Image (cartoon, rainbow, N blue to C red; front, side):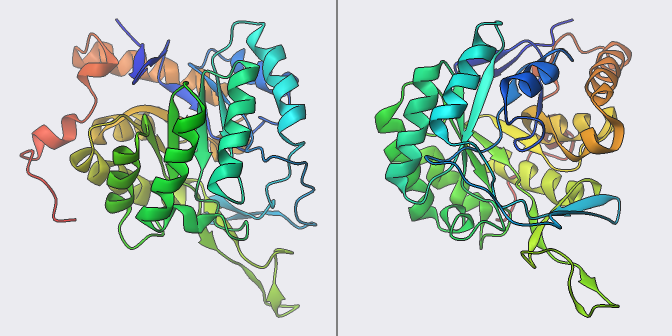
Length: 309
């Protein structure tokens, strides 16, 4: 049974990884994630300079998931580069999540991560609560500019993390593919808020946050399904995966790999071993010899016709 999955030039020993922002802010936490046996670890999104983030409250459980507005707190690219080097010395596959105020800044941070040994960079083009960030994946021309700037600076694979809050995520997907992106990560958390009825004001200090976890899974699966029919680069599915069944849904929809985030808060790190064990059992029961055989099968079963997107 072959669990390995290819994301363009990057080969993972299995299709599981953590979602950016979950336990990825330093080498100790990244190594804890790696100890679960996942195919790659993803750092917390890092910018060129250190950033404190928003005041509390920043994370609220709601409807089986979470709304968060952390404000992208991070130690800055120079510090994170040192942490990535420590993790790379242990032979772990590292994907560095990066962001910037401009396409040029994205490229500078990505280059620092490449120099530190990261195997790929994931461009956070879509955080719903960091001022001025989500617009990079809401407009095809802006996302294309970022990809082109980063591709001009680094030689490692470049992944684009997109939002569903665009007039057409498919058009944005096509634009990043045209610009040279090696894979698409879909989707980021979705803009949301919660009102305190006693205090009669928004609960989060930032007022608006991003909804993650099981409530957004059907939206994320649809997005992956649509992108699979529109682009020819690998997809990484993320959004509400808490069980083996969820991960398999994303793979059948077209994901070559999947990221798990909120489920770590709900189930702990054991969720990775649970999903990997379940994936092996499913493959054995269904007669699959490799993960590759499963990717996008839902399209063939439904007739394989392109969606009107």
